[in-house]
Length: 275
Image 1 (spheres, rainbow, N blue to C red):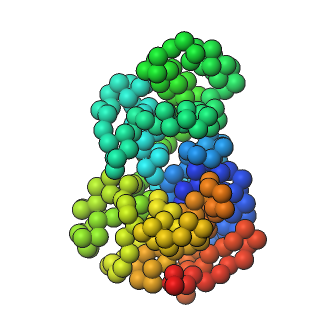
Image 2 (image 1 turned 120 degrees about the horizontal axis):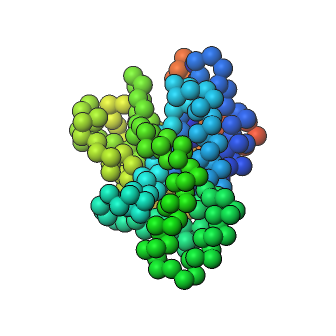
């Protein structure tokens, strides 16, 4: 049996579709996606729909989709501006309701891929005269109108997936809680944990969220491969949306206990400890 894993796709649909060519979903094999399907890349709406349809086709026992912090920010913004029920709060220094401002600063790559052409024309006409608060309300209403199924799906996404020996999670868990990590790990820890933690733990942790070239991991902005600390951690956020970045595909063989990284040509290389 093989487990395949990817994380931090960030709207890069082409890269996801390429890596899916090398994912064998026959038999008992599983695909585990660790969240952050949206933001930054050019096709966030299409990527969300692709992942949603993939899970719908194979079932949630075959395609395991976890929630990332970018999905959490998106939902909080929806709740604030569509229903008015959410409270503005911060998660590791990022105001959730800044989500749309960030998308605006990037040219609205997410919003543009989640609404119809008619909605976009209406939005652009109104946006030039409306306040930022009014713009947020209008954008939230439009997204909800055309993506009700996707939003409902995102709300139900679990925060982690575990096996007897592994934890798959977007950012990390409370390792100080040791074998009680499920009780000690809040949503903020599982979706936002930073910096990346390394060393020995009671289970192997496979996570994304922190780019593998970041200061707390390889400390090399050009490093975009799987980071293995030689102990209990594999990090697989290859910063795909950045120049030189990669969408990493990790393969785990349950019979051999070996991890491999599959490149864009389908070549599978054993994972070695970073330096």
